[in-house]
Length: 219
Length: 162
Image (cartoon, rainbow over all chains, first blue to last red; front, top):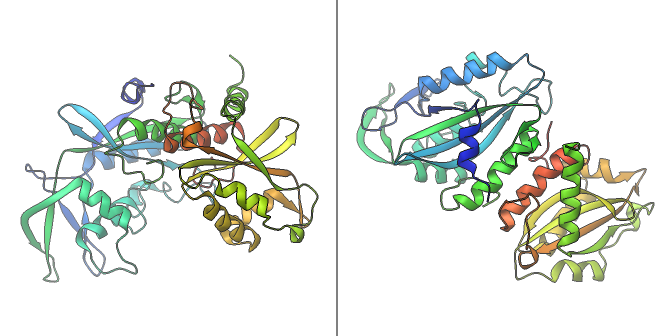
């Protein structure tokens, strides 16, 4: 069977960065958002720097299709893929996807890793802290939270006087960012468009890491 | 090396042929959409694998032995899933408007359109060489192949290129 990890290592453009900003015990740091001062899990500064650099550096290249990303655990030196997704350059409605437009100031969407609801960090924060919003936390991100975090004994008080219990990473979590160009080779060693490559990677991870993979479809 | 899109088409066609999967006609070309009925034969076909997880592939037939996969999914209840798909399609729900645009013109079906159903036990090879055989993985492999081989036809929203 094709070796997914070997393919990831051979992909020269892949860049691995820590996903969350944590303290030395792995407790995920938070920030407060909006008038309601909602607690939001903080992305690691390295992750933000890499994302902005990759998007801004490739945006005008007509061969660049977007980003393939893999959220993974680093466990005893091993990489365990947890979630695979993509952020396309081209939008469904507009020529340039709103997910990556103006990326340096676009922290709400931030190539699908934004602070807003319907984006990974915003929805995950909603699932962890259960703050009020126009809808309930989504089951998908409750699964993410149960997988990634354990409780901590650290309580912080927000500016409105509400206490929030912080969470700690079970294992270090990284984000592997792979800028995708037209006809790059997927794990099959065949040229792929970005969406095709994403499906190949999930199709392999489904078999190799079934107990860990958080992608609902394909599991 | 030949054009990779042609190679990917061959991989899809070969896999569907090799599985010996059963197929049935869903829509007939040039027939008016309001004449379509959910026939007992179609219902029987879709219900025959109710005990195992299945891949299903909707194809439009361009010529003899050349069929283009347009929608790929998996289910343990293929009949229920297709009752839902067809209800959404004929009610022209928003998520099925692209189906209507591809399959219908002037209220008549454009193509002979078939459904292949491949139960788990019939999967003895993977569409992509050296890839897994599980239903979930095979579904993704087929969407991946169709995304490159037939991007202008693929109706899977999540799987297709923009």
